[in-house]
Image 1 (cartoon, helix red, strand yellow):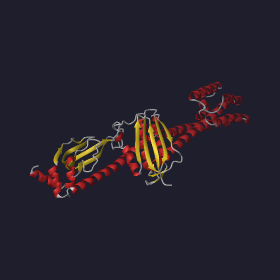
Image 2 (cartoon, helix red, strand yellow; image 1 turned 60 degrees about the vertical axis):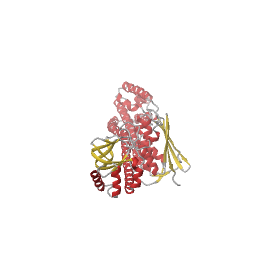
Image 3 (cartoon, one colour; image 1 turned 90 degrees about the vertical axis):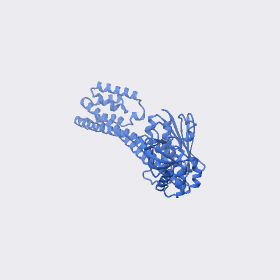
Image 4 (cartoon, one colour; image 1 turned 30 degrees about the vertical axis):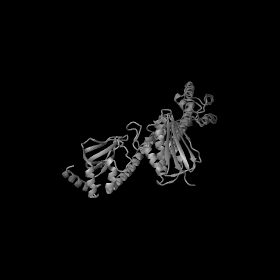
Length: 469
């Protein structure tokens, strides 16, 4: 380089935010062994999947890596004047998950990787600074990745819970509206029966039919198929028509234990307007009991879902290690994923012994592991596929296996599936963080994860230390 250019670079290095405090002799080494590079707006500094081949000392500009995680491009890394980037001494040389693009004119001093051995010996202060920068970058990435994956998991959780809550909530609303009308009908029929001044024998005949209405609903017990139930309703409707009673009441009695013979005995005792009032009262009462049962079942379902979400998120627990029951965590996770399981008609089997030892860990973080593994397994299988979850004690550990009968992972990429941002899903469908987060979370729990895959069978194995008794 020309002397004037060298002097300019030395002056700029002396003012550099990251490297400015290094000795002048080390600045001089960088100038002597570096190459000035200039990138226009939109230029690719490092391509996706390609390893950086130089250390980049940024003097000006702005370089960004953006990744689409399903909601548009999201900035994950950026460098400005005063930063250092690209390849660094002692780094593993990971490939960027997307193109590093200059978003404004950028100037850098590039030091080729081939110069790193000499750089380490000639520039110890700069080398230490670069190592610290690399560690800080890794820590920042880990924190950001965990935060982003938690947001992704929260999105899945919210979508799953919203879908799961929708049906029972709609059932409560629908049944409550019908219940209001049924109570009104029962009150009206009750007034008519009171005005009819029926004898004790007639009231006893009505009570005999009412007793059959209070038996368990046949539809719920499975005694009638939908087709048989429709046939039964048609039979009752013909009886109502023959006795000049509103046929609309037949539907409420169809899924009870009331028989035509019982109705014949009632019609022999009660006639005319009194029979109409009695049947209206009976039908309204049956419908009230049926609707209250539906509301109870739907409310119980909502309560169960809330309990599952509460358990999955450990919302009433501090995020500290404690003995964790894996069975409960996996059950809560499958409840949250229930809508997705049903949408694909996936068969999920769970084989976890009741006396499985607990593991020592943070429950909400382990549930994030189960969420990612089970969600991936459900995605992997075809409609009607099978996912199996099992767990067993092994020495001083607990091993959890998540198996699916999907197409398997190609051998050429199976070694990369735990790399950050690596995904086989289409753009916007996967962030490539799930399995990396699984690996990181298990490392924090002194656990490990492994995978075995072939067409028709992929199995992830998670090993965690058992909690001490």
